[in-house]
Length: 173
Image (cartoon, rainbow, N blue to C red):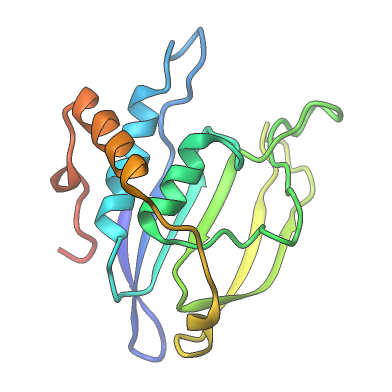
């Protein structure tokens, strides 16, 4: 889902809620479709002056090359950095958990709090992230940036799946 939220201040925030198909032997034998979705959404965000939040079950761990590429291409920040792992999957297995649910935000926000919520019956734990809209203060935050190799890899991912930025609906239109 792609939407444009209007804050009480009148400011507008682009939000993207994603749940790409997981790579798994029973559902999807490779991650190409998921990777392409992340690359294309990232490309619609980069160089945007508008506040942005991307969140969802990305079916990818925080340390993977694809998630890191998404962060580099989009320029978004990961609120978990320096705050913990926040393993959200699998809620029913105590010793086999990893972070599949993510939230990334533009520099317009600062993190007020982040915590994994208690078990509620799903195979995922909820991840509660409270952000404060602080566009001026937030500019001091630094993310990671894409280099020429990252851009080339992103191009090959998008080309392989025959998708581009036009495939992502523009929020608010």
